[in-house]
Image 1: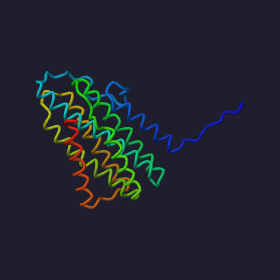
Image 2: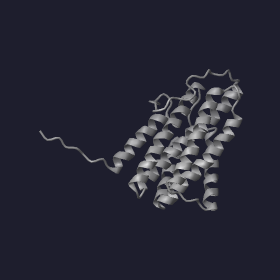
Image 3: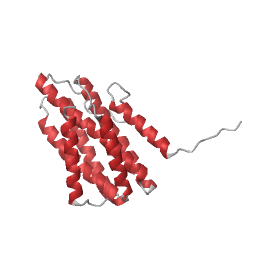
Image 4: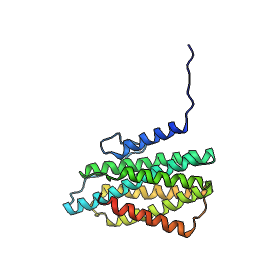
Length: 217
């Protein structure tokens, strides 16, 4: 009996990555990753209701940001010109999936929800990632580096706003900061180019719209 083995296609990769994203987006889904949650062994803080709402808003923004990261990396991977860059983007997306899962878990613990606009964030970011990939590999890597630079700054602002007693949320944000900085360095070392200032400013504006909206919705 002959066994037929079908070659994996781009569509297969898209479906696989979308399924992985979907599992991380919804609290209660299979939110397990290769790395342990940095908050796993830390005690839960007794937050006031205003503190709980503020922390939940920040973690919802972080979760939405990771939804965007998944889509950006996938869009760039699907339009990368070099097979090595395709693999680089998929590996980075897999590492970012840990962040997605940690944020979803923290929102569950806070009895709150992820952004209701996650599908919009995902589709928009996938389109942006595809355009970045089509612009050429060095610009695509430069886009990764600039994105991670802005995310790292954004996370530092969140770290300062988190209540000092909320060690669980702080541990997650601090580990995310370390990972984002490493991803940015890796992108530049792989051949990324610095983006023009107008592009960087446009990215900041788009990020501002997302973070402001996702904090509440």
